[in-house]
Amino acid sequence: MNLPQSYFPYRKGYLHVEGTSVEELVRQYGTPLYVYSQSAIEAAYRELQKAFPENENLQICYAVKANSNLSLLRVLRDLGAGFDLVSGGELYRVAKAGGDSAKIVFSGVGKTREEIQEALHYQEGKGILSFQVESLHELMCLEAQATTAKKKASFCLRFNPGVEAETHPLITTGTETSKFGLTEKEILHWVKNNASKEYLHFLGVSVHIGSQIHQLKPFQKTFQKTQTLIQKLEAILKRPLEVVDVGGGIGIPYEKEKPLSLKSYAKEVSRYFGQRSPFRGRLKILLEPGRLLVGNAGVLVTQVLYEKRILKRRCLILDAGMNDLMRPALYEAIHAILPVHKRLGASEKTLVVGPVCESSDVFAKKAVLPKNLKEGDLVALLSAGAYGFSMANHYNSRRLPAEVLVHQDKAVLIRKRDRHEDLIRNEIL
Ligand SMILES: *Cc1c(COP(=O)(O)O)cnc(C)c1O
Image 1: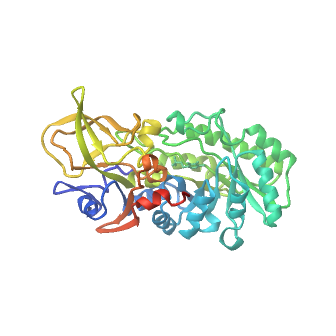
Image 2: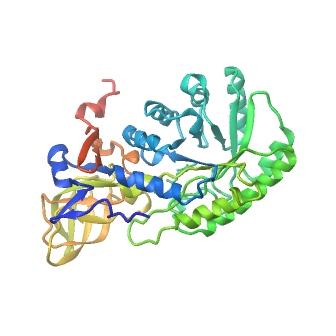
Image 3: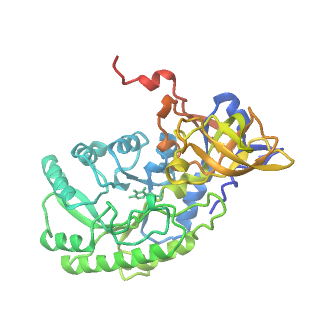
């Protein structure tokens, strides 16, 4: 897997994104600034694709919530990606980016009737590939909406395999107590009693056990249980199922973590569901990677506003805060920090914080940073491409940062920085 740094080299001591100088981007667009490398996204996509045998019946559906900027969606669409959505808002974005109706799946525990209708009518009524249904009430609702629309809704049932994903508790989704998915018992019961419905078409099973997973074990356990479930379902239905959606969750290195080998991941997917599985290539395999495709393709560039000492410890205050990049405050995530202009000399353990009025607005407690890094200097928070901008918010009435997409030595602004007016756009006085 790409190291965070590979598309972010230093040239003559200055940090670049591909062939573009970060300092020059800041001169033009200011800080805080998200900068993405198109080549890094493309490389991650192709690496995942190449990990599978060429004849595998595979569709990558990018999980839009990881980063939903239209230009990134366009890059991924051009690579052949479909999309995994969790809201009508994401469907709207995917439509703008030209997402192909035959490659879209809609996940999430709380789809509204309105969202279901929007998806049924997507792309002049073509609809979407599959609703990933998470409760039996949702399925009844889907049937009612499909009947009203007189459109057949294809769906998968999301299976909760009761597997511990071995990641941060706030990003696991496949344990028995999690709000996501249905138990095997519920799925078998429904299928036994509802084999054929005029406006519903049962495609298969989806699973997604969590995010930022580095071990193969939880995936293997999940795939094993899912394979067994599909076999049971096919026996009940006396027909083959068409789709297995193995979800996302593949972890990326933020610091020195050893990432999952994509080859070994792909091998497991193929072994349980692919050409070499009991299904012999007749299941369409959907993958829903989010973080893997964009996480290490983006950095958040920010300026050091002030330096202070707190009980002798050095503290740097940045102009980016938890509203711009929420992961550290939300689940103690760590982002490596690099000075944009490399400095020689001694370093010092540094507390790095944002300006937001919350004690959790801390990026690093002990970042090793050059002693001579000072006010006005720029730093980059690495691996900020996933769940960075997409989680950004206006807390403290802070304006959302700008975003730039770099391809080699070309940089395009793909989202303007908010203006003050944007903060109050929908307010009524
Ligand atoms: C969030 C999510 C994903 C993507 O997870 P990553 O860890 O970013 O790969 C995939 N599928 C579903 C259903 C999700 O909710």
